[in-house]
Image 1 (cartoon, rainbow, N blue to C red):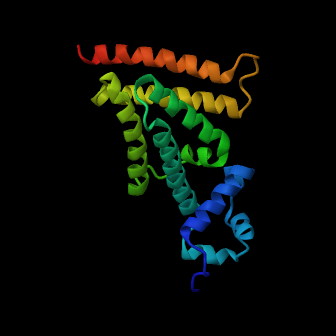
Image 2 (cartoon, rainbow, N blue to C red):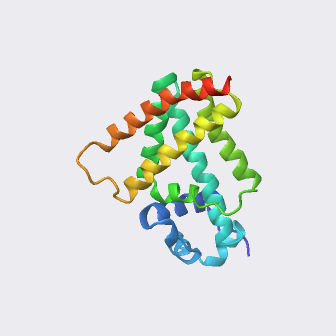
Length: 193
């Protein structure tokens, strides 16, 4: 079967992302995607090798989009301002793209070279920002994990309506980021001993 004119992997991923964001990642099937694209399901197999391959490609696409948003947010900023910009970009991405965000945390093949490359590119964005604090090597990775844990925790709680009190969630996030930033100096000092 020859590929449908105008149908390519980018079109498929864009449609998949729209479906995932609108209906949830778990609702994306080859049948629902085919219906959304107004094509027959076998046409998808010219571009993907089934639902698992589609989900892997969507994960890679999602990580790339998050990386682009975070990198763009940090441009022209340094230190605390850059860390806060990363946090805002991360949480904004998860709100605008809940399906894409879910696909980032729904990876099944951790050995895929394209996935690893995209994850490393995202980590590099964070490492460049953290370099302003003198964090290198293992210390920088520990700080990156701490930042990701905070951001993912806030995002997950927010997506599941876990913040029921009246205080500003955004203010809570930024106060927590400030505490982490203060901790960067502890991480640096501990690593240098």
